[in-house]
Image (cartoon, rainbow, N blue to C red; front, top):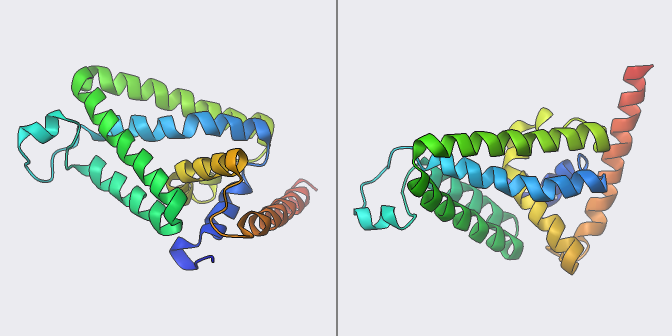
Length: 197
């Protein structure tokens, strides 16, 4: 059954879902959200180590630094939201982190930041266009920046699992969330009409 407070999956999913109802915008986010996570991890590779492990660990994609701490926080949060899909999301987070560390080690800082900048501009730009042209609603981060950044990767994964495999964190989840999303969108449209009149 659903949780409350910080780990209230229905509340988080409803919040994100209300900003992503257009199929084209959803598709754009499906392809652009995880690359943002990955390329951010590339940049975080260059933050200083918090603890000095032997160089053997660092050479194999593991580095205990700010990037690892943030990855761990994302992974922990996702598992607490839902053990099954959250564990898959946590695994993807750690794979991104290790892959990003290996890539960053090979490229070096001078090439890495250019790659990160290009990817971030392209992916954020695509998402803003998706919201402006197809969704016709500002992105979720305009209303809750931290929640949108934290939930983005997990939201995309959960949407994908639901549409491809009919996955539900618990019975009745999608029915409940769908009703709340529709109510949220309806409320937003009413508010928007009032602003315009």
